[in-house]
Image 1 (cartoon, one colour):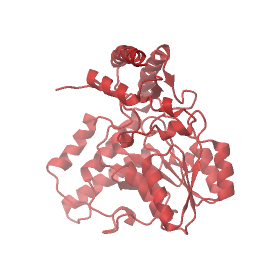
Image 2 (spheres, one colour):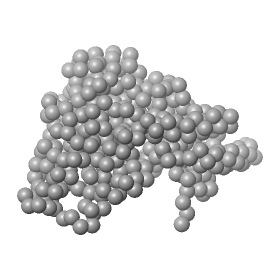
Image 3 (cartoon, helix red, strand yellow):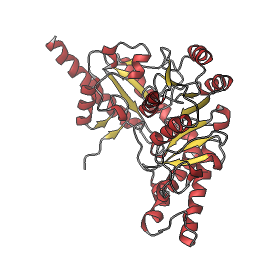
Image 4 (cartoon, one colour):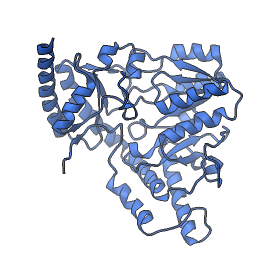
Length: 383
């Protein structure tokens, strides 16, 4: 079976065997609805409660603040739409580089009388704090949502500072921390946010599990009403196996965080040293970034073209966010950073994992050098 070298960990990560091991009993032989009173049901409830504690511990939250959902998109929608439903129509401010699952629900609020505001990025890819402070103080939004780390560039925002600005204005602040979990130390308390979104499959957990960490003083209207599960904020029978896997993935990510960061940084450094020597433009390189992410471009070579060539050679990368792979437009994040559209269309994202080896990086670099040279020659002939 064809097994490419995987360099797209920001899109999803391989399931850790230790995570699968704790999930298997709930997939094979343990029926039981966690809302049932008999033994199987109580066992399922106990397993969910343990996972809730594991997830909470990974971000320094309390277990009662963890609301299990299906993933980051649902967590983001739950906050944006759920909070707006409990407030008079006002303004919601989001970062210019936000994931579509924040931007699109925010845009949907316009039909309910809400205004949308955009917080600009600086040239390094982070939210411009001076602009954000001025805009929030002037417009007094009720809601602010800014991602902790950008899924394309890896640039990390100063969410703690934004939270202080938002609180002074009386706004609720939410952060999409999906990309940060497992790649940097997270502290729900220290950040000072009202809500935080997480996802299991970005940290070697299963698809279909995520969480909204929610300050209990914040009122939300549920997206799905029903049996009252998850504090009444997410009705439906819980996916016990996926939740148990999420908890274990969080536990492992917390215990192994320092070593994972060290290995990812070493792989990225090896990659970017060579990219610079090859003449690549590396975006957000001067920003505080996730340790695993490199967003780069070779001028004159379309990102989709380069990714396709590399895929056929056995290397899996992305030309942008996985959720936007069908969108031919250049990265919104890069455009917000002031990158010219012609260069933005050339962007490619490599995101290593803690298991990515230096030998794999070296093999990729050899292929990349040959592929770029070939494409540049073709471009010169066509010119």
